[in-house]
Length: 192
Image 1 (cartoon, rainbow, N blue to C red):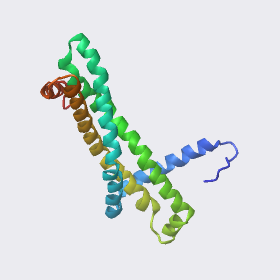
Image 2 (image 1 turned 90 degrees about the vertical axis):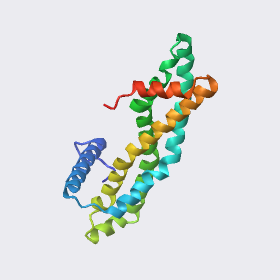
Image 3 (image 1 turned 180 degrees about the vertical axis):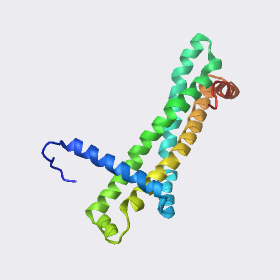
Image 4 (image 1 turned 60 degrees about the vertical axis):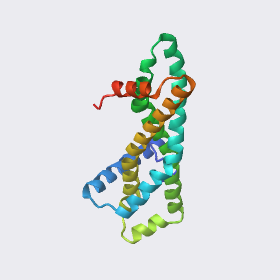
């Protein structure tokens, strides 16, 4: 796309229209069912295992800091039985999914953008088109599926690590037994 705006449309409007058009193409290509399995597995490896260290480290420290902040106040009110439940609800509903998504968007999104940008500059995408290989099928769909399949798994692991960090802090700093935290978490969380 050209960096100069066409008369009557702003640059951002043109980019929005291009993004909507690309999204429509992705949906159509997904409905066709042609998926490059090897590329998808490679992208899943980039999104999942390669993102584990930073996602889990972030979640560990968030669980620890959240527990420190909450436990001080809950001890003042005599509500230590609810610490694990509050931690579990905060991690499962907000902190683990949002932080994992932000880490993934920063790490994986920038890697994908750099890779596809390099492919555009070196005319590899044009070469794919010349070989009658659709760049959407070959480049976009595997990356999208890799993110969609690995993000929930990373979120679950981030939740578990955040709970482990919070439980460790509660037991080591505040002498609250681990079973109190875990029982409280089990009582507060519902499957649906």
